[in-house]
Length: 67
Image (cartoon, rainbow, N blue to C red; front, top):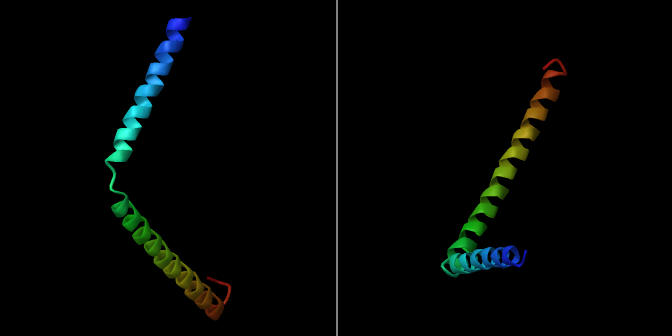
């Protein structure tokens, strides 16, 4: 039973070490730049989506409810 506990602790330690190494190699400036670009792109997409829905509703109301 004690051997199994030691093995589980070793696995979690290896996982933590691997995660720390991977995080240490990340370039956080580029991740931040990507996040900003993604947020701006999302806002632009949402704007186009809302404008499209508004125009669609305008056309439907102009032509009646038979659309």
